[in-house]
Amino acid sequence: MSQLPTIGHLIGGQIVTTGTRAQDVYNPATGRAEKRVLLAPKATVEEAIANAQAAFPAWRNTPPLKRARVMGNLKVLLEQHSDELCALITAEHGKVLSDAAGELQRGIENVEYASYAPELLKGEHSKNVGPAIDSWSEFQALGVTAGITPFNFPAMVPLWMWPMAVACGNTFILKPSERDPSSTLRIAQLALEAGLPPGVLNVINGDKEAVDTLLTDPRVKAVSFVGSTPIAEYIYTTGCAHGKRVQALGGAKNHAVVMPDADIGNAVSALMGAAYGSCGERCMAIPLVVAVGDATADAVIAGLKTEISKMKVGPGTAPGMDMGPLVTKPHFEKVKGYVDQGVKEGATLVVDGRGLTIAGHEDGYYLGPCLFDNVKPGMVIYQEEIFGPVLGVVRVKTLQEAMDLIDAHEYGNGTCIFTRDGEAARYFTDNILVGMVGVNVPLPVPVAYHSFGGWKRSLFGDLHAYGPDAVRFYTKRKTITQRWPSAGVREGAVFSFPSSR
Image (cartoon, rainbow, N blue to C red; front, side, top):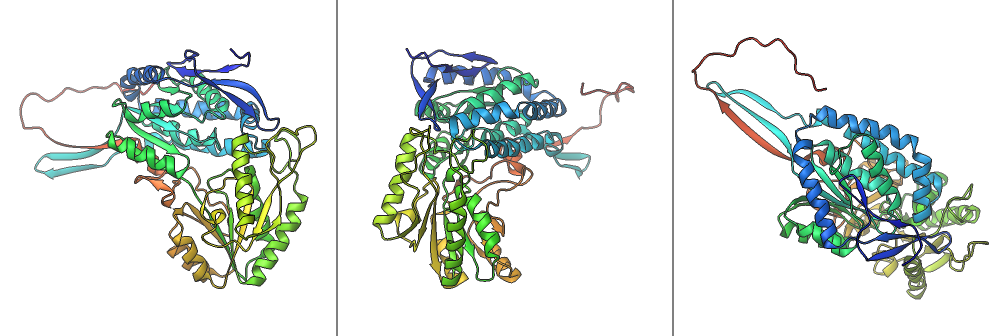
């Protein structure tokens, strides 16, 4: 057995290290395994589900304000432990510390929004719908719910899910990515410290066996997922086939349209972060620029070349770095393969990031920023989600041609337009078949009190992630119609006020 530290599961408020299957967790900056994570067998997942089910009745009946106070406490703890959590993210994902801090902050905002749950859970009431008959609706918790989260945001995406789920009175099983599980587990421990009762939130590390157990166990009532489209479709179809409520967010190929009238300097600056931030490992990254007119394309490419030459690539922990390594060796090889494929298909490789080595970190998974020109629809680098620091420029003649390209793509997660023309922007935002749209904003990720979700094959299910849609996803509406016939003695006066404390 390896002597590396072992990452276990959190079940019923306790760390559990049973099971024999495990896999290494690598530091992508060094290419070395630094931890082992246990992969839960079916029995361990079922133990977690049983704990969540046992905790549900008492938690469901806890006043919403008391549940919300736990979220308020957690927000404070996350802020206090932010340096620790960011270090865990960077050590396993590779993103630079400032980017990890940004991720954590967006997660904290979702915890803050979940603390408003008492307001969001209020139903509707109608008096005298008939003679002395009243009717009202309530939003009731589902029971045991589950989340399956990706490697690219090990802190933020789980915080999209479980805080609102538990604030609505559900209990939760979280299955984070086995590539970078430490920050996710640490946040769950902080939730216990914040006052979350044992069993309300459980963390299971694992692979397909754990996922399939969650998808098929009748005690799990709803599943939320973020990841690639093929897996999202599998999660959705399997979960629905087993009678569950499912939201499954999939892949993306986000296009940025640059108009001839755009502020090119501003667009280039924005695109640098959107394309190469977090090494391109974001579902809202911009991997394609659609330039309207050759002059626009030439200006954008010239600006990008200049900015790329200034970029600092290295370990995420080093000061002043703009971009860290890719998450794993297989993922590095896959992304490099896409660059090779783009060259083979005839796209012009303007900046080649292959062959980059970082002194002292020669075994790290580093790929420098890559820039393609003359990318065409139908090329693999145009069609498929690369999830790496690879930006392609597509040349078109008109805005309508750009929009037709975007609308024809299977993904409809995010898009943006850079322009000074209000009418063009309005036409674009109104007509484009994409779920999240930016105007002079490259990453139009909604804030915590709106909801996140793409169109077409970027989302399976009816409701978007976090925000108001999360309340609807994690609750069931119940409508009660009530009449009391005249009879008996009316209740006497009661003077004590029931407190929520």
